[in-house]
Length: 233
Image 1 (cartoon, rainbow, N blue to C red):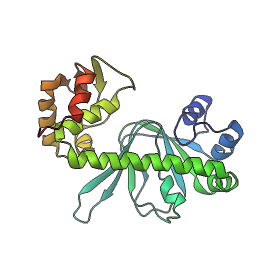
Image 2 (image 1 turned 120 degrees about the vertical axis):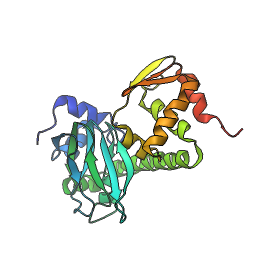
Image 3 (image 1 turned 135 degrees about the horizontal axis):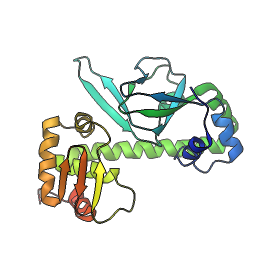
């Protein structure tokens, strides 16, 4: 484990959970935090493990999932750099993690012990309100994701995923690199791997082509409009 360096601290400062905090408050919250490095396949925690910490992803991607009694795996979320996770288990008083988390690429993760963090939180009511807001934003994102799974076609879901990989404000032609393997992308979008391949083929008509993990979008605006199109109309 390593301490936060200046570059990492700046990344933390820009995340939704910690943005806008005064330096001394941020230092208090993170003084027990440590940076851990993981290779692909590393486990952050397992479902049922005692809750003692939460995490902020500095680099890489992390899959949060649950195993079903039938032996299948349900992907709950895929975390990107800047996302914090497992804090809800702490704030709701859970004793055990309700899901598992696996690193799906090389990653660097800030691990924040629960007890010292909660001690500072009890002394800073304004901070508690801010964190509640960040958790509410996360809930809104989850609701929107569920709505896409229910109401959007498989090509529209994939189109939305590609747009989310772009930097905010990107227009015209753009190229993105798929951040993790296609089987996980399919699971995240609620489809089978073969359905993902068919969806990618259907997106050719709106200017999307691919070569390996690299995807080229001819016109981001056209793809964005396709996401909002009622395909049954």
